[in-house]
Image (cartoon, rainbow, N blue to C red; front, side):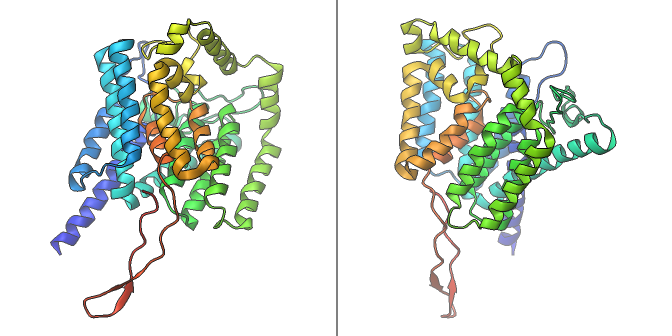
Length: 402
């Protein structure tokens, strides 16, 4: 009886610890005031590691190939920040801490699979419901956007009530594009770590539709990628009716929201700020010397002023900042993904970090890369096992990925 109680308490703690850590990692916030610092990043990493450390003690970690390759990539980045283009020591420690967090979360997707999937699902549902409430309040009740992010973190979010004739919602995130990027990554993690079920299906559908609610440019990119990922992973399980419901919902939203007209105005009739920053950043890199391209422009600062270099995408940042050393380490992860999952699935998966705007050192992207480099397979068919009474029962299905 005491072992059962201990197991239940451990399970509940695992769920709460994973939910808290995932919330901090997938809800980036900024320090309020005229002089923002990196404190939120250090805070999220520190608290996350403290919350997840007991899970490693309760169920010791097991070394897997994807984790080894990720560790090599993170160490390549850290060594670059120490020996090739030095940065402050605390920044190198932050990179290491995020790598360790990603490793603990990856292990939790095995050791605490039910709790991990539950925490990811709850966080997606919370984000989706709050952005839906924000939209309903705006269109039906107040005609102004309620700032959930400011209530939680004290700093203003960068939503827009009228940006080129459309409202842009951010939910509890700092801005609409942040919601699309982080929730897109979290949805992909759910798809890779959970088996197919009705709950996972509708949670994923809800997450995809909520990403569209941001009316951001990133949503137009991540929604098709996520739909392609769902269709490929669940091609033998998903029904035509499921796809029809999602297609009708997306078509209805595109038809009545005005988002297509907004995007046309934004990208073709006006000079879009985020797009121009990307062009400036890529131009700044192309003008670097051969040595800078070979050894990397460095992780400490951007090669251009106020060009938002990280907005070009995580893949571009890791390759151009880390040069040949980091690129080779990343290629090992890509090669592993192609080897175990095939070219089509690997291509779909790596489309996410290609346009992901989160910082190159953050744990979510390393977690996604590890899952992408993990062999995915359907749950094994239960096999009969003998009970002490001599009767037979079905054994629980094996884990879905290894």
